[in-house]
Amino acid sequence: MNLVKLVIPAVAAALLVPSFAGAQGPRSPQERFALFTSCAPLNVEVFVTNAGASGVTQESVEDMTTSRMRQAGIYAPADQPTWSLLRVTVFITTQPVPGGVAQTVYIIRLRFMKLVYDQLSDPELAANRGRLSTDSLGAALRWIHWAPTWESPRPGIGFFGGRRDDLITGTVRTMLDEFVTEYLRVNAGSCR
Image 1 (cartoon, one colour):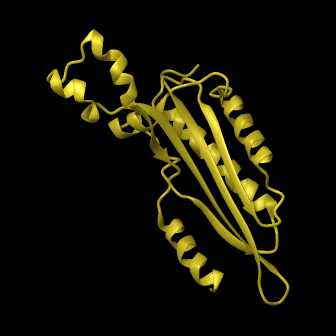
Image 2: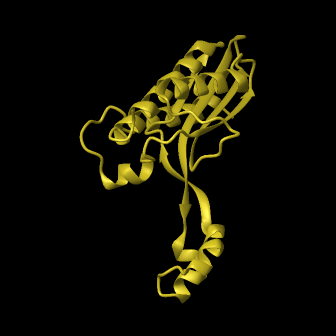
Image 3: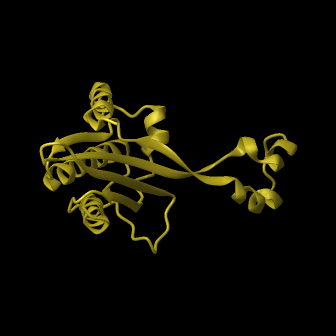
């Protein structure tokens, strides 16, 4: 299987997706649902799968992510659960190609998650014609689930010859900056 034939269309598609990170103006109802939290701190989850010889590690991406969230004043440690979290996923693979040069492929995705109440699935709510009684509030908790409400407008996808950790970490850093800019813009009235 020719890795380049698989990666080039994916990179081309990613470049065609518009980036809304720099958008200005009032927040729409969709933006409010996606990112509004009254500027409450958020938890961070980082997943790094490095199937290559890259020096990018779980710890380095976690450190970069928590540092950026702290700098923005929106970080909550894992021992302080919140109603929202930022999930950062990094996949890296390096494959040898003819000529002795390694081909590195990476995919980076940022996803903002919120705990949401799925009222359509709650049979208690349906039985009471859309009203929760005080007796049913405890039962309603089982219909609260994590749901992605925002994803990076463009995934970080790329490939290059050799090993360049700086390109991967730079892409993560840029995507984190874009997230923080959007998060703070949507929560502007609530942030200090």
